[in-house]
Image (tube, rainbow, N blue to C red; front, side, top):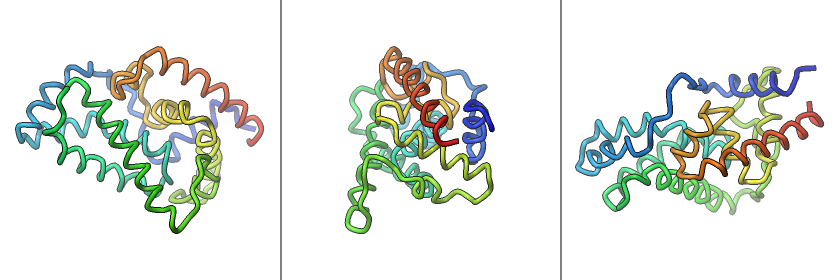
Length: 202
């Protein structure tokens, strides 16, 4: 039987996302000049912000919506951000502002789906499998994703950002605007609960 650590590695790889760990976390304030330029209409600067924050947005959505919907919703989030960027007053809070847009877009997705499908806080394994192929590794990844999604919301997002998107704890805090101590505690507690769930399922 694979260890929990092996299972998590398989999980991250099978989702088709490269865990980018060789990039150092940029100081969030270092992005302020890009935000200012983008507010002035510089599309190249906005493209650079996309490169810096796409993993964060992808992870936030992955923690909340079926995997098959995530890529389209990432694009939606950045389109909303582009339209509303001129209204952002505190440019040093761009990451937290963008994270809020991503969370709201996930909520909108579920509200729009309510008429067709009953949605609960806990995601079923069937939802986790949607958009994932049938290989053994993908099946295991679906189980792990379902396990993460069954955790309290405070743990889901940081775990996805860490395990799938390859972001460090300090990078998660800098990008999302969360306190570093909260991220550290939520990652630690989330990993403990994930291990317990995977020990039961795998």
